[in-house]
Image (cartoon, rainbow, N blue to C red; front, top):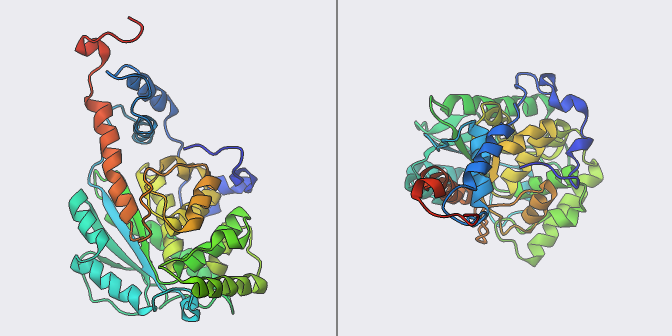
Length: 368
């Protein structure tokens, strides 16, 4: 997934590609383009017209480039849902109250949520990260307590995070990857939960892309027209207090969330480990865009699972010049769209590895 001329990550300072840009984070190595080329050559020898498998073909080649092999596989995949609350949620920017964040985390851990069901279906090891829930969840073997604070501050009045908290959250995201990635794990599905986080994501997208704020605001969990107008007005008030900073860490500090910062750190850490990153919906894509401002190479490791029904998600995907695998009108979050898209990646891989070649099958190709 290369950046096109229409993207603006090239405008980032050169220092964004050196290790000192984020202390403690490794520079992400480039994927293996020679392996991608070899994969494309093999795809052209398989018993099918060239390109007949559509976007599954470049997807298989991308996985080969990431894993640096012509025998790619998804092994011991993990799904990680980062959860936190947002101070701005008290202003009615969501159709649901803040208490739902904690309630849904308990639902995840009890196996009753959509991501819980899909993780079981797909054979994913599911982990939940308390990045900043406004509540206390009981100890659970699949819960990582990385709580920075019980929800962010209201960014209409002040910065959502302070600089220490933001750096801590980025590092906690890296630490979560290091904790759950065992020997052989090469794929991570990233998801989130946080009432009010599409409001934060809208401001972050506005700061990253420079698109008008109105293009960055959606209905989230299902706001009606009155609620959507209230959300827009709230976000206008936030940028009246402080225009979005250019620096990605400063931007996160002003308008982000603890779960968004941890997702950003997790993506950088996973890419540095040369893992396949399955990206979910709007908020996770915002985190990936922030990570790409820090190190653009992270995008080469990402597969964008789906296009959310949250309107600005499509705009952001176009800005990043990436294509999602699925478009199912989903807007649940939790990592659910990315989890479903794992099936498409597995299909691309098995077609690449198990199909016969024209020569091997004794089938004439078009040039015979």
